[in-house]
Image (cartoon, rainbow, N blue to C red; front, side, top):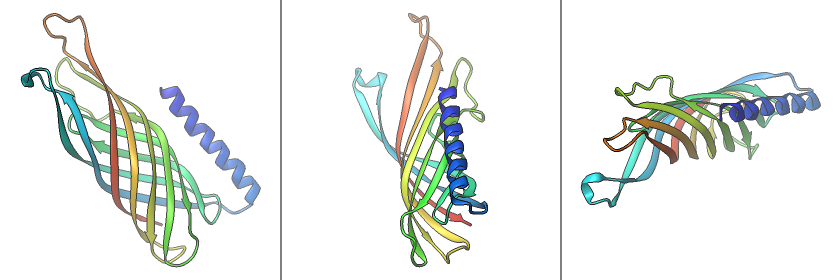
Length: 195
């Protein structure tokens, strides 16, 4: 999984450098920092409910920053680093990312965003006998950038976030091992600033 995430990031950076070589535009640094909520529904087995599944709504906090270079007037490529607080997991996704302006006129622009990488569990503090590891992460979306061209802008982004995680649990009396593979599927709504 980590190798696949590394290959995705490396190929994105190679593609970005080849696009830059074709455009002959001086590289300009760009940053896009956002915070917001991850909205979703979770279905899980509840032992006190006679083996039936239970469904709950979830709202989790997310924070991320994209640091990259402008490859053209409309396309930026770089690295996105973040932190996502799920109910029982604290994951740190690192990914290759792109931002592309779909409209190029006026002070309000529609843009597309895409990030692909791996979520690590560096800051997760597990109970005794438990272990959390991250997994692949995908995050495509659309957003609005409001501000003067070439200056600081306020952004609102709506995206789909898919994050995998693996949790090792303490075995119960009749088990040799116990674990759970999770896939967090969330609607991400974020407010941010870009320059």
